[in-house]
Length: 180
Ligand code: ZN
Image (cartoon, rainbow, N blue to C red; front, side, top):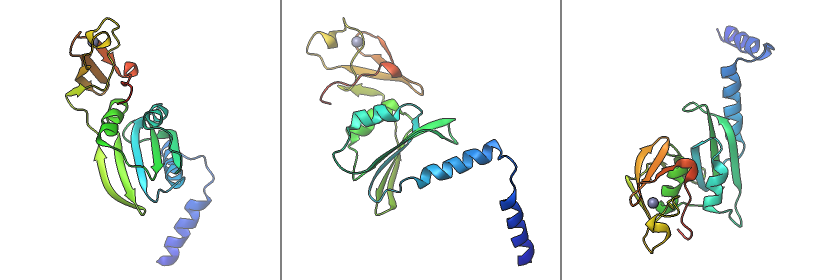
């Protein structure tokens, strides 16, 4: 019996035919997770493809600690995703609220000594205060000392609306207030 099993394995391994798309995606996925295993730090997964660099800019490049960025990785949930791994870095609730604006389906994993200690799926609140600038130059928040407030109309795709001037804010228009 074990002989038959072994023979089966050898046969599979020796197949030289081109891999199926699914098999390719699987091996790419396996490879991407082999790149850097975090000892301690944070993994931000399921970021929309193309958003990891913006996410890193938002968090700031640390002076030490390894940062691994994966772009356009195959994903089960969506076709492509980005991933950001930061060694020796934790995230504040305010930072996670901002990341949720870039990737409303992102998950955040906190790793300690190679163990997953906490995993959260980010969610957008219904109202966002003092975080996102209104893109309307004549909005009161851009002219008077009034803190911006945005309502979340849709989280996927991200669509906000200024509470004061009713201007719609698309995800690519999201600009964070300085110093927040
Ligand atoms: Zn406004």
